[in-house]
Image (tube, rainbow, N blue to C red; front, side, top):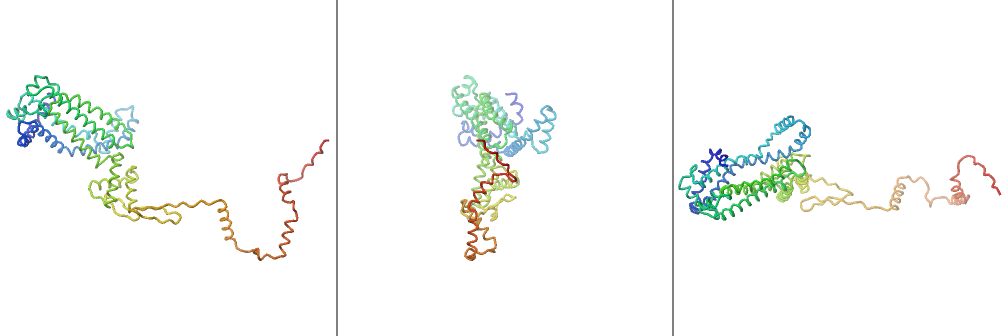
Amino acid sequence: MDTIASLFSFITTPVSWVIVQFHTVYGAIFGPDTGWAWGLSIVSLVILIRICLIPLFVKQIKATRAMQTLQPEMKKIQERYKNDKQRQSEEMMKLYKETGTNPLSSCLPILAQSPFFFALYHVLNGIATGETIGVINEPLLASARKAHIFGAPLAAKFTDSAEKVAQLGATLTDVRVVTAIMIVMMSASQFYTQRQLMTKNVDTTVKTPFMQQQKMLMYVFPVMFAVFGINFPVGVLVYWLTTNVWTMGQQMYVIHNNPTPGSKAQAAYLERLTKHVTHHGKVRRRSERTIVKAIVAKGRDRNEFERKFINGLSKAGLAAQADGTVVKSEGAVAVEVQDGATPTTGGGAAAVKRQQPKRQTKAQRQSGAVKAAGESEPKTSLSKSEEPEDAKPAAAEKGAAKPGSGTRSKAQSGQRKGPQRPKSPSKK
């Protein structure tokens, strides 16, 4: 480990200088030889480094989302050229070039932190061995060796012997208890950060191998921290715990305000944004306008949550514009009116009660059809009251002329037409 740390010795002097400057400030408040002064100096170093790495973190988010978007295309390439690895690599690089995606961008924050991490390890190791390093001179070295965090020296490790810990003015029990608690907190914060990313900020509409990799890392990283943590000095554990807590808070902020499209976090965010926009009638924040602009630009490619957001604005009489703003629009709601019903508005939203026609009985439908047919035919015949009296007996006689004709016609309806074959006489 010392060999790896020595490779980053070029940054040891700047790191030690920053720690000394913060120690001067906190030493005036808590005392120069206290663990608070040296511990808060390390925490402040972490915060300063992470603030400088925010642009890289933004690139990491964009790269991760771009990789999630490309996963279906990458899977097709892998299946198409599964027997030709060279052609598969060429097609992958071509896809990255066409889309402007860099797979290593998601690792930029971790890679950028590595020099500072190893430089701090080198500084604390020098304190443990009593060697001056960087701008830390003899007085500062003696002060740092006296500093304890909850009874554990800054330069002590979990694996140190009792004699070495005694030289730093502490007991082995205090060192191991403090380091064990910090290792558990460090691993737990890393697990929670990764789990939060997997459960809330992953596109649930696309199942890709990338999700399986992230799920595996959710369990691998905490184990790695636990294994390597026992070899880290207390000061390095303070550094790594602080950067994990920072990452967790930063991840929570991103998930809350700029979630991944298609994720559960986006559904919750758009629901909050819908309530906010319908209440105020406009989009106030620049970040919100950016998201609305991206949703409008997608058109038919919007996911379920984005379509629900646009429909929610339409029901409120609002319309999202291409520039990310929201304006009032009376024609934003398409209302289907049936059976003469008129739309009613309430609470700023158009609400229409769709009336279903009453179901008629068979007799009502027949009477309505007869009535319609009677109204459509011209009155050319005489009415019943105008019928001549001499026509009534004739009609009666005609109806009574053949009393059995109806019965006979029904009886003969089943017979064949033409000459009938005579029936054979029955044999007695």
